[in-house]
Image (cartoon, rainbow, N blue to C red; front, side):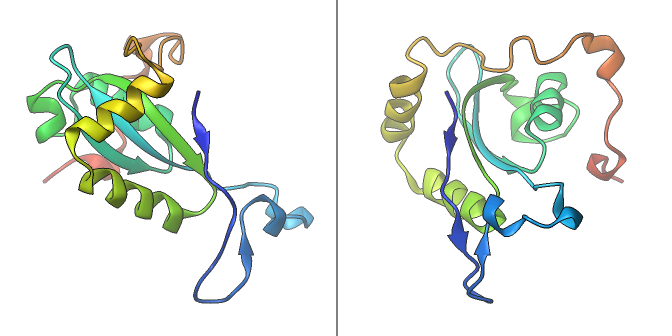
Amino acid sequence: MPVILSEAKDLRTDQIVGPRAHRDSRAAFVHRYCVYIMSNAARTLYVGVTNNIERRVHHHKLGTTPGFTSKYRVGYLVHYEQTTDVYDAITREKQFKDWTRAKKVALIEAENPDWHALSVGWYSNDSAARSVDPSLRSG
């Protein structure tokens, strides 16, 4: 089960950010940011942050973005946490990256002891969703 990070104050403006900050009709859309851990059959770990977890996991699964995740085929989402504050998400990602592997494994196993892929059932037709976000293409 994903963890929902708490609301926070924007340190620059001292205003509440998160769901309570979006009460008027102009703010019907609440941004959602996720910090996540991906893995593979060998249990190699990758930590990332995104504003669209479904799209980002799909890109990892397809190996469409060159680099570590496509090289090591880390296509299984094994942990994620959500927040409405991008600074909280980035801070948490940095925290995860500073942790030892053992601490990350303990976090995963506390919520997902069998390392199940948490994105199972997210995609109705993988072949239809193979289009790549142009902003992620290199070159």
